[in-house]
Amino acid sequence: MNETYIALLRGINVSGQKMIRMEDLKKALGDLNFIDIRTYIQSGNIVFEHDKTDPGNLAAAIAGVILKHFGFTVPVIVRTRSALGVTFKKNPFLLKTDHDAGKLHVTFLDRIPDPERECKTNEISFLPDEFVISGEEIYLYCPNGYGRTKLTSQFFESKLKVVTTTRNWKTVETLLSY
Image (tube, rainbow, N blue to C red; front, side, top):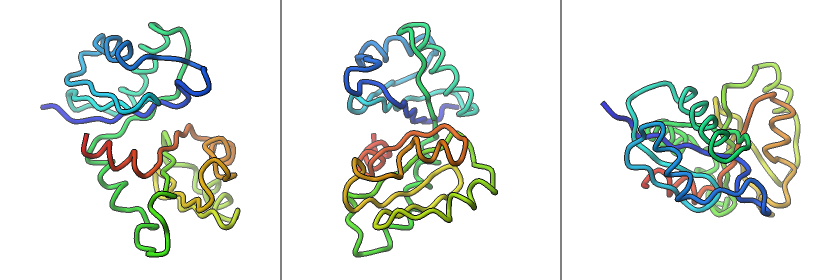
């Protein structure tokens, strides 16, 4: 039985670096026997069907195909559509009526961080930006825009020692319905 997966690639097609045309990526992913491969915008969002399997194994396979076909490594995080639905429903900032949804982001983690590192990271504050670590996601509210926050993927990677990639809330919503 097939499952719908969402693959999130970090750092492609940004500032002329690690360029991959989405049509070329879809063709390369054909090596993995994915079904109904769809991409959303040029920044590495892929929705596809595949037999039920471990998302971590799919992430490693996608990273391997990118290395083979395009010659560089890219961090890849994969979620099932149902897991992304849970991520969507759990966003604590949606309950705050004074928070603009256009300023919400989610940083996806490749695994649940070490509890001690998570606790130390939770003590850090860069107001007015806010974050909530919840399992394999970090919910962000950046009222002055993500481009101005210190709460970047690199910040969380250095503090939590995990691989991350961040998407704005509109992208998360779109990927759920894609």
